[in-house]
Length: 221
Image 1 (cartoon, rainbow, N blue to C red):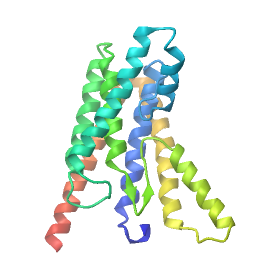
Image 2: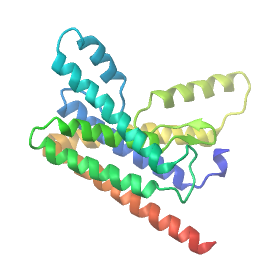
Image 3: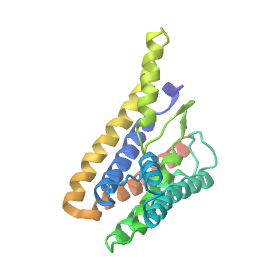
Image 4: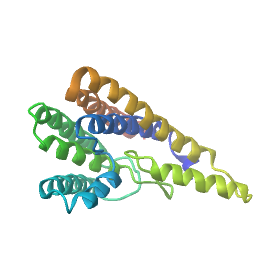
């Protein structure tokens, strides 16, 4: 049950969704209206453009491939799907921050490689947080979150118990993603692709906090 998980789960989910929402806002504003934190729109654009532009189709395919690469890297690092202390989440967060910083640097030189690096960072994060107590949780998009909330509400109307903590977690993810989008848009308007620096350092900060928490937990045992 989610009720047995520590409270830092909610804080981490909110922070990660804020990070993803900020990166996605930069993508929508700076990558020709292309999202990088989720792939439905990219896949649709790819299908629509296959008969029109080979170069554009290759570019969109590369974004999809970069996201897949990031998810594969997460699978290699973290080993399984269930959140457990002691796994290599800290290293995954450090790599994500590094990818975002690299994306910022190459985008300032007008290189499309920045799109791919940002997409890989989001793929890494999306795969890093996967399952909480049997509930699939993603922090880089909210379609599944809204779907799960709808299912929970429908089940409640049929008389089934309503898991308030799970709903709270989902609402925090939605709020974080929207908040991150607002922050990312404001930062992009002022700093351009430099707006990727705050989410990169947020990833580094989360890695440091996770290291501190796991160390304190091991000392207390």
